[in-house]
Each structure stands twice: as structure tokens, then as C-alpha cells.
Image (cartoon, rainbow, N blue to C red; front, top):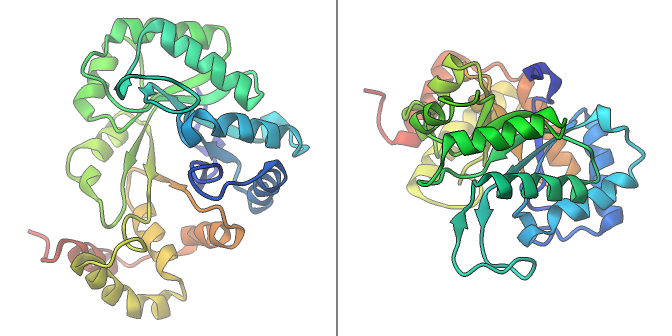
Length: 291
């Protein structure tokens, strides 16, 4: 099992690099990989479904041209979600965690990413039909073959993790966590990461702040105003700093595909937010003082 320190504190989320966002060609994606590494971001987050099951292959082609040693980077990927897309025909969106499917999906990801192993494999969403023993059989075999190093989950509740851990250890959980969507602090997800010494990862770490104009985001914007001057930091840096303050030692998965914004994200780790400012932002999000 790897140590948390083996991963970059800011993880590059690749979901929007392909057809679900920027639509980078191979050269642009190669440059994006090199930009990340130049900034010290060495961990890349994938999922087989990104780009309608096309992103991993596009990234793999780009990585093969980036002149980067595989041991300098860490790859996270996810499997389990099946939906209808040009690259894959399904009658209904569903989850598949059979031993055969997990094994097939990982081997496909390895081929597409042009690598012999992934550092972390995550089950993308929980399924009501999960069979822990069957999942454990697949993961144990993949680990034995050196195709995955660590095993984790994404969007799982503590009880669903406990279900899996009747058969196999779970090293991490990637959940939605931001100032605007902070339920993971209250539903036990982040507590469970601390208790189980799991790697806590946050997808959509900026939440809805830049996407929506609501009463909540306006309250947060007002609260952030004086803090941008106080800390000499931008709004997005303060939103990340708020996450990084949590004792679960969360790793934000930053989805931007712009080098300057990635650089700004890294600087968030240097913002030491005062305790009362942290709660001022929490209060702005909730719309009322803490109970």
C-alpha cells in the first residue's frame, strides 16, 4: 500500500480534458500533462466512463508522447458505471461489479492508459447488488498480478465501506466535498476516512460557487470579499483552503484544464485560514450560525 505522501496534494482531474470539456487533441493533452508535472502535480484522476469511454485512451496516447517515466506519476481510475454511449451499448444505466467485469474493465483501462498498473482503482458508485466476496476476489487477483496497487471507492457511505471491508480493506474514498456541498462532514464519510486511515479525496471541490448564482453563493461571495484581501488569495484559493483545513487531510481533485488555475490551486495549501474565518464561511454556506 502506498503512503498518502506518494500522491500530489492537488490531484489533476481529467474528466474535462476530452470530449466532455476542452476537447484537447493529443498535442494539447501532452502539454497539459507536462504543465501539471512542471507545477508538481503528479497524480491524475480518471474513470473509464469519462468522455463516453474515450478519455483514458486519449490520455494514454498523450502520456506516451510526454517523455515522462511512469514511476514519476500516479494514476487513479474508476470502474463500475455502465451507460449507453457510442463506444458502448447498454439498454439502461447500471452498475456492474462482477468479478469478470471488474477484471475486464481494469485490463481495458491499463491498455488505454498504456500502463502496466494503476496506483488506485476505485469503484465509481455503490450498487445495491454488490457482493463483497466477489469484489474481493477480483481485487485480490488484480493486486496479485500487480495490475493495481491500492483499492478504494467513490461516493460510498461508511456502511457500504464496512460491507466491503467484511472481505477486503478499502484504502480511500472519493466523495463530493466543497463549501457549497459539505454533507460529507455530517454523514460520517470524512469521519470514516479518519477512523479507517483512508485517503479522502474531494471531487468538485469548488462546488457550485462559480457555476450558479444563488442566495447561498451570494452569501459566500460576500463573506469571501474581505478574506481575499486579508489572505492575499483569490476566491478559488480560499474555497480550496477551506477544504484543506479539514482534519481528514482531503486531496482535492481539481477539474480545471488551465495551467494558471492549477497553479492557483497549489497556492491554496499555503493559506492558513483562521478558525473563525473557517466558520464564517460555513455559516455563509448554511445561511445560519452553527447549532
